[in-house]
Amino acid sequence: MARVSVVVDDGTVALAQVWLTVRDARAAAGGGDADAAAAHPGRSDGTPEGPAGGSGPGPAAAEDVLDAGDDDEVAGDAAVVAPAEVDDDFAVDSDPRPLPVDVPGRSLVVLHRGAYAGAVSYIPVLHGPSYPCSAWMIGVYVDLAHRRQGVAAAAQRLLARHLFATTDLDRVEAETDVDNIGERKALERAGFRQEGVARGAQLRGGVRRDVATYAVLREDLQGS
Image (cartoon, rainbow, N blue to C red; front, side, top):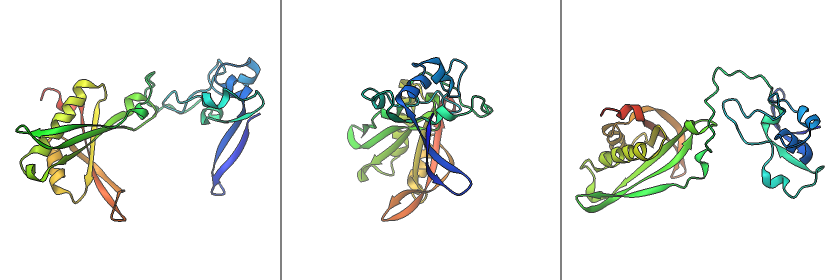
C-alpha cells in the first residue's frame, strides 16, 4: 500500500508525496506482478497514466530502484494516484520524443559588415508536458558601436528563421524589460508580436522588474 506524506496544506487542500515499495513501483510501471499493478489506477493493463496531456515520467526514477530491495521505499510519481478517467478537454497531444530539458543554451556571433557586432543566444523552454509544447527563448546583445543601425532586429529575425529552418519547434520567444524601448521596437521589426507582460520576472539591482513578452510562430513567417 502506498504511503502518503503531506508536504504542505491550507487546511482544505494539501500537496503530498507518494511513497511506494520498490515492488509496487515496478508493478505500477508495468514490470511487476498483476496483483500489485492492479492496486494502482491507470490504464487497463495496470500501468499508470501520465499527467493529463502527456505521458509523463514513471512512478519512480530508475536510479532509485536499481540497488533497492523489494520492500524499500521510493518516491512515486503523481500518476500513480491519478484517477483512471480524466477530463481530456484541455489535454495536450502526447508525443514520444523526450522533452528538450537537457539541451544546453547556445549562442552565435553577430557580424555587421564583416565586423563583430554582438551575439544572439537561444535556450529551450516548456509550455506543457510534451515535446510539441516546447519553444525557443532567444536573447541578443549588440555592441555599442553597432547600435541604432538595425542590427538587433536583423539578428533576431535571422535567428528565428534559422531555428525554424533547422529545428522542428514552432515557436520562438523573447522577453525584455518593459522600459527597454529599443529592444521592443527591434523585436517588432523582426516580426515578433507582443503577447503580454510577465510581472516581476527579472531581478535587477535587487528589484523585481516586469518584462514584455514577445513571440513569433512558424506560421507567421510562412510565405514571407
